[in-house]
Length: 394
Image (spheres, rainbow, N blue to C red):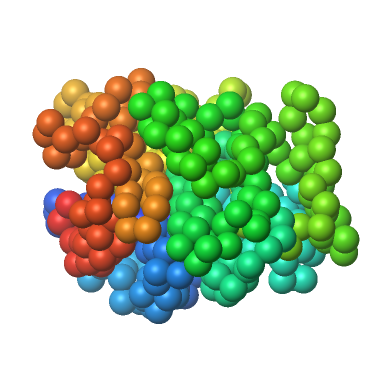
C-alpha cells in the first residue's frame, strides 16, 4: 500500500466523522485504520443501562459507516514512527502517510483495579462503559428491592466521565416510583469532590443526590474488588473503607491511552499517556504532520461527542490551512456532559475549556434540566449521528 494523503488511526465517532468531512472537503486519499467490525453510538449505552434503549439501537456494521471513497484497513495499530509518518499494525503491515491523525480512544485498564474484571465475569458488576456488559446493568438493577448498590464515576482520563451518573439517577428514579428506594443502600464513588467541577451543574446534582438519599464518597476510588465476597475497597483522603455485601456494582474500570502513544514519544509529560498537542490547534507540539482529537488527545477539556463535533470542524479546517501555510483555527475546548437527573429529564452542561457556559442554543441555560433535552438526547441525537455527523455534514 502506498502513502495515504491522510491516515486516521481510530474508527469511532472521531475517525469516521473526520474521514467523511475530509472527503467532502476534497481530500482525495483518506485511510482509516480500525479493527472493530461494529460501530457503536456510545452515548446510548447509558440508556441501555437505564432500561431506555437496546443494543440494536446503537450498533451498525462498520462497513456501513465507513464513508464512500475511504480506504478501511481492518487492523489495529501497535506502533507509530512519527518522524517517518508510518504506523505498524498488529497484522504486520506498515502504512505511510503525509498527514497522521490519531484518535484511537482509550482502553480499559483492568490492572488498575484488581478483582474488577472477575466481578464482571461473575455477573455482579457491570457498566455502561463496557459494551459487552451493558445489558446486564438494567437486568440487575430493575428488579432490586433491597441491598447495597454501588455506582462509580471513572477518574480521568475517561470518556465523558460525568455521564456515568446517568444509570445511577435513572435507577434511583425507577426505584422511587416502585416504592423501594428507601430499602436500598445506594452509594456513589466520585473521584473528585464534586460530580462535574462546574458549580452550576454540581449545585443541582447535589440536591438530586440528597433527594434520592445517595451516600456520596468523595475524592475516592475503588482500589480493589474482592469478587468472591462482593466487597469493594474504596480509598480516599479519609482512609480506606470496605463496602461489603454489595448486591450490584455499576463499577466503571479505569482507562488509559494506548501504550504505543508514549512508546512513540508522542505523549505529554504531564498527562497519563495522552497525545501531546496544542489544545487549541490540535497539532502535535513536536511533529507538525501529526494531529490528534478525541479521548486520547491532551486537550485540557472533558471529552464528549459534542466536543468531537467541534474538534472535527476545527481539525478539518486546520489540515487545509496547514497545507496552504495559512493561520490555524482555534478550538475553545467546548464540551457537553449530558446527565439524566430523573425520568426523562436531562441537563446538558455545555461549557468551554475554562468552565464558562457555552450553550448551543443562544440564551438557553445549559444547566437547567428539561424534558425536551432528554427526548433529543435519547431519540434526536442518534438520528443526527447516523445521518449527518458520520457523513461529515455537521
